[in-house]
Image (cartoon, rainbow, N blue to C red; front, top):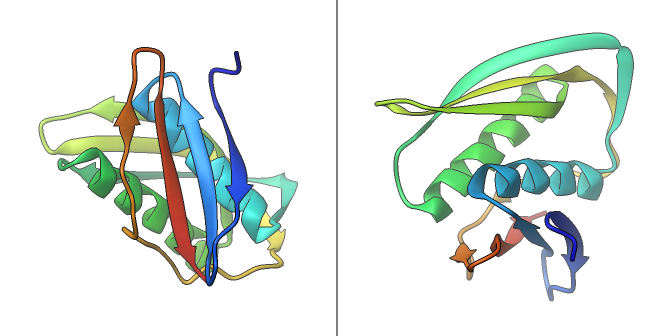
Length: 135
């Protein structure tokens, strides 16, 4: 059984991604990885980058959308691709420490991460969800 991963799923108008992970933080990591793949990102390993940001407390769905929209903002405004995430629970939310690389290019623009039919499901063995992206 694969504990974490993602796959693109059919969607009528936008694009969607089914994601799963053994815990919520793995679900976040896999969601970012899948979104990067959907965008067709080409990174430059010779230009390392680091960033820290905070996700406010809220529902799992709200935290997932906030996280991915922040990652998307970084792609578009700082040309950053982050493949290593550390999450720290704090009184104010979740601090995200990320490291990765400068982006050379990407092939598909994603406008936003949506709440359309979004539900984070926790089972005995993993977290899973399907995320719809506005393109």
